[in-house]
Length: 287
Ligand SMILES: NC(=O)c1ccc[n+]([C@@H]2O[C@H](COP(=O)([O-])OP(=O)(O)OC[C@H]3O[C@@H](n4cnc5c(N)ncnc54)[C@H](OP(=O)(O)O)[C@@H]3O)[C@@H](O)[C@H]2O)c1
Image (cartoon, rainbow, N blue to C red; front, side, top):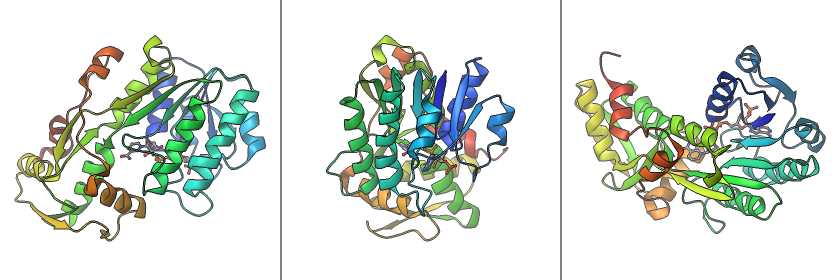
């Protein structure tokens, strides 16, 4: 039995549905404040609880062999702070996993996240990765670069719905690594059973490009004339989640850089979705 934590989120949902499609039994740790009907309909076993509540996590871990956690408090707010979810909540999850004799955890961190980062989310995730390494569990820590679903489809897509100018933080020519969430799910699933994924930390990136290139590709795909406007780091783009603005400033000041990991896809047996192909599919004007 696999336990997915974060299954009501974008990546966790994708992973859960794929596991269920493979016919695997899946339990999900979910809050009753989120919409769990798609997970229930797909056949997931619901364990209601919260990473902030030890007894609920303890109960969810009983009878589980492996955990996949994509959970984060970064976009939730309120009591679900980064400290409460990404750091303390995962410490609770690890403690309960060890008590329940769980063998393996797949944890989604991010590339470039270090314990001395200026960004709290990066520090919390890096310290959870440290705790996982020194736990008794076998583990795979995934270190994907920026998700194109968030940093291209949402960041640029939301802006070109209301105008022809795309605001970017920092130098538009600066290149970053990008990856599709689909490929992160591919790697998480492959890592569950792959011998090379044991006690491993795996960076994942489909390729690198700049926002200048991204906007030019989107302009070509949509047949529109689009412009890029650069804002200095530490600026906030109105309407964007605070964590996104914070991470973008971090990235724009050298915190994140270019990366490409073609050998990972080769080794774990999936096809990387390259940034240009993602954009062509997502933005082409015939829908
Ligand atoms: N976006 C990127 O570019 C990027 C890049 C690299 C790595 N990542 C990492 O990828 C992971 C997945 O991202 P995502 O976009 O799928 O995240 P998401 O959609 O924001 O999902 C977050 C999940 O965490 C759950 N959660 C939050 N607080 C919780 C708590 N107290 N107890 C139990 N569950 C809780 C949420 O449940 P509720 O629905 O109940 O709130 C939700 O299922 C994250 O860890 C993120 O840091 C993202």
